[in-house]
Image 1 (cartoon, helix red, strand yellow):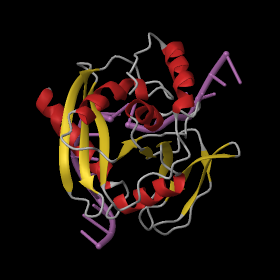
Image 2 (cartoon, helix red, strand yellow):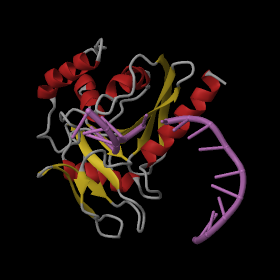
Image 3 (cartoon, chains in turn yellow, purple, blue):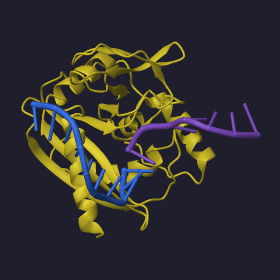
Length: 225
DNA sequence: GCGACAG
DNA sequence: ATCTTGTCGC
């Protein structure tokens, strides 16, 4: 397992991404959708006090019921810079994952994996550091382009960086905005979309993300005020 | 040079 | 991300 290194500045952070990118595994299909466990991770910030709280919520993939959850509190040590989100979130997310009483199975995070200017977004970074299968599900297309997918749940279209497919715009509910799925580590794009669709059974966002979001917000309020 | 830009 | 009232819809 690779240890997280906090770079001194933005140039250092890009160098870390360029160096770790070679360790991303893209030729595994990943865990079968609807089986085993799926874990959502998310963070909430208190910018006034430089506090960040991460949450990890483990669900049964078949029932979407909560199996386990954990939180971790940390300090913000890196500014938000588009393309360098991972350096803000990963240390505390790792702490939350490590304190889980069970194995996470597939990890689902907010943000991107391969859909990244240097093909090393949060989901890929987290995957390389933990060795776990990880996917990213984001609410925005970032700088990438896409054609509007069909109107029904399950319809999708390629998320493009030029003519390269870096992810997919996936409609998870009829008549709602799509989410943007990309592979992080040790998972294929088709499977990543299938997982996302099963997790977004009742809402636009995957249940993993909704649970982790609610938990880290609650934990932040309890940690601060 | 300027704007856009996951969370 | 986060700050926030009312409002539309099931």
